[in-house]
Length: 327
Image (cartoon, rainbow, N blue to C red):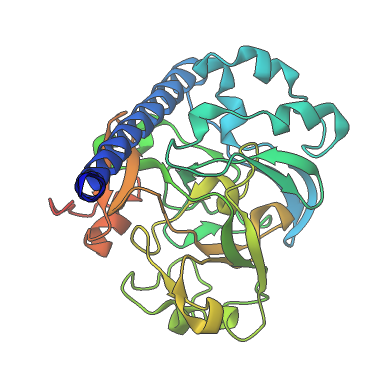
């Protein structure tokens, strides 16, 4: 009888304990994003611009030179990680031996407390540490390619470093970072996106992804299982970025037996020359939404139920959209 009563009490208390622990983890995640936000402001204060997330040179979408390192390594001195920053040889390839120790370093600031994974063994370059945060790198249009000078509409992207003066929508109305799940599955290197392959043609955020980009379902894209958001030093939107193409935690068809699952898709990666169009969705292990860092340094919990057009508007720096209060 006593054992039965204890079992009932445990069954009643366990959900409350788990909920309290998750609430604490979400608060810690919020604080980590605030630290990154402060670092970005300090970086801009020193350099006059926000950090690059990719530097690449080439013509006709053929790469002549690229810096593999993304935005997070560039702000290390501003998050009290100068020793780690000094370990990085920015002139050497990210995967090369001189950078092996730095790239494998577990940087807790960039890992959400609710994330179950820590270190990822990269199939090509050795051990890489995971990352749960990503820069806002576009709505759908991410990078115009090495022959294009056109910038995307978001705060960060390839070959561009924005000044705060460019954020005419207001820093408090502009997404800087949000969350992503490590080991995220994604489709990439689609030879073309026949329906939406123009920077001015943005898919409706409520549209069925299969209708927008059928290539990912018929074998014309390469699926990468467990490789997204697993390299904190990287440049690509699939590793250290997200887009506002779809609202937070959106599942798309294409999983096992075409079930709906956490899947992302991108056309041609930035570092191989682009052009890049992508639906790299903000995702988290927090029930019901994602934490998001805004340009003014504030962090808000954005629910999955946010109006997708509002989410899209928050991802632009000077779109002039009217942002509703439904989030």
